[in-house]
Image 1 (tube, rainbow, N blue to C red):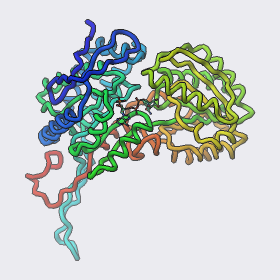
Image 2 (cartoon, protein in one colour):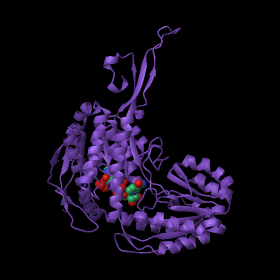
Image 3 (cartoon, rainbow, N blue to C red):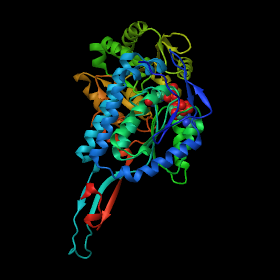
Image 4 (cartoon, protein in one colour):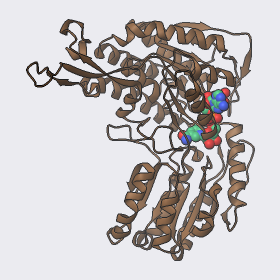
Length: 503
Ligand code: NAP
């Protein structure tokens, strides 16, 4: 059965219509009308979230785990309809949406298991020392507690795994925080059906309805009102540097500043070291081309820059060009993102000393791969060449030697990932680069490609600014829950009054 959205917001268990409408702009299939979010709706959703907080934050870990598992089940019960509306709205292929659904339900279940284990509470106990001289020591017990209602901004490029019931929502709900989602206007129908799944799970588990609301986009003041709402205590965001920075600044300027966990841009540099380049340069180039063009290059972990010694660059460029030339035009997520890809490509190709290896043009909402080459000297002299171009664009930066390769690494801004392609004979140079890259990136990897982020305990998806706005956090993996918790110390509190988890 195909899914036709009704176009309403979900506010604390109620589907709410509105007079103003916006139309979706699907890549294919019919467009639908959606109610435009308003500041008044933001206020209603935040008030309901705060009302629900007391009861929800006091639920047991088992109760919250059951809610997360019920959301996963309800998403699976709508699997085909989610894939249908998701592919229509985003242009992403069915297989990608199916895989992303599995990742989304897997994330929800992973957080269920994670809170059952209880390690995330980080419980500590310093027993009282009443006879200590010169001062007795009080009894101190510490644990992590939920921070309050959380705002989540759905990402355009992961309509399921980083959207309505994605990692931010899953980790906030696991922590014990109600969530108000601002849906991304690129996939409002997908947001609606996933919100239906959350709604059904909330009803089934008897969770307070105010624990979850979805307000559709359509207007910028919705997101702005949400991050400035006094009842919101933290924000999870994935998107552009410009949008993220604007919302981050609003959070910092509040009377009560709140943490803004923004996952923003990254060029994810790869360093192809000499032995690896001579042993398997062409093979690395093929892998790079596949990683660069996956999902039309619309991944925050897309490896946009490859750094290689200049005498080895032509082999890499030739093999990458051949592999990229075989890849046809791919539909992008929105017209705006396709336009930004075109202007980003023009910015790179117009840079001093930049050579075209493969350049392509295509229709309005499509992207074809582009490949360029530039010397390390010209790259170091032009900051614009180190900025993210969201889409399948690769830039080869040639280094005159080890010193210049190191200078390139040192000059990088904060990154989500940095990759080394190396063989055993490259270890001395790798030893030089490793401390530099570990300072720059949230994840350093060897002999692989950064696209494909494992959802696991030891994953970090974050990094120094501008990769993210908070280098101490990750938006993927179980540590993501820490963003929505704060430590509270209980001093000499009678056992009967302590939170259940501390008794
Ligand atoms: P975006 O423009 O930053 O939008 C993300 C969300 O923030 C949307 O809900 C948007 O609302 C809202 N927003 C943006 N600027 C705002 C502002 N000034 N005030 C209030 N709300 C604001 O990102 P996008 O639409 O996903 O994609 C555009 C660009 O983002 C891409 O070209 C790419 O460079 C980058 N991107 C990066 C990543 C990554 O993981 N690093 C992922 C996706 C996209 P509306 O829905 O109303 O626009």
